[in-house]
Amino acid sequence: MLSSEEREEIEREFAHYPTKEAVCIDAMKIVQRRRGWISDESLQDIAGLLGMSVDEVDGVASFYNLIFRKPVGRHVIMICDSVSCWIMGYEKLRTQLTSRLGIKMGETTPDGRFTLLPIVCLGACDHAPVMMIDNETHRDLDPEKIDAVLEKYT
Image 1 (cartoon, rainbow, N blue to C red):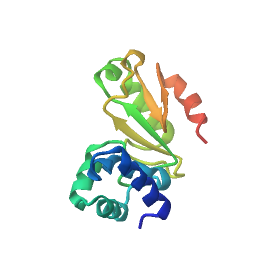
Image 2: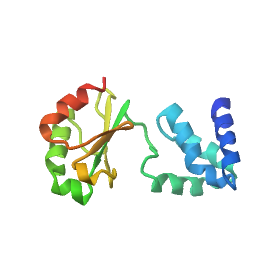
Image 3: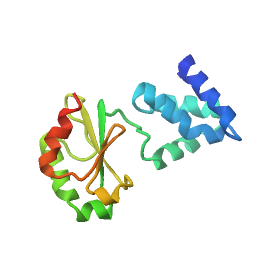
Image 4: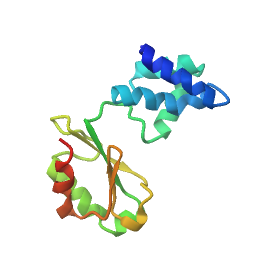
């Protein structure tokens, strides 16, 4: 069930869009910011508030790669796997991250600290390879820089 705060924040967004349905991504981002992810129950509640079917909202959630449909760690690492990042060392970076964290892509560390996810592009091709942790972009990476970057996120 949506909290009264979530519902009120979503309803305030209605004034910025021509239809309730257009608030779909913002509504999911509001809930995710408070809960960390979008559960099936949350998806149903959002659909009801926006006058959409659950399938319509789920379609948006599954298309938009920044909506998490299962629990994630306290910090989400998104590593760019675009062509530019591949050319500039993505594979070495991925290998270092999976080794250092002890998880595969798409998994969360046992302590719940990090979730490691691929992302198509972070829009910083001129500073490849790139990864984002939470909302902070880390550019011009190499395997040696990984430990120092991860230490910032306790």
